[in-house]
Image (cartoon, rainbow, N blue to C red; front, side, top):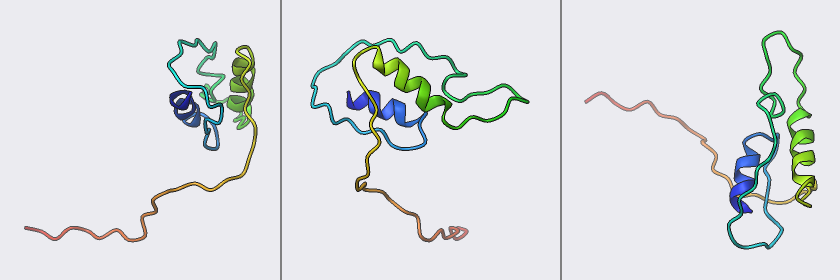
Length: 87
């Protein structure tokens, strides 16, 4: 489930975290197109919630659901970038 969350985070506007407590490996097929995940054709209007809605619907078929929650997250922040000196 944690691998699935990492994959879903790439397509959501926020991080997906596994809180199911379900161990093991699963073979799931989520019926999602590139358009469902927010990849749009030139000239089409952007719909930022489209991917989340599509993912929610696909997960619902397996009895899984996304729940919005607040929490703390560890991250690295680049504060300074220094150009390397010439050799």
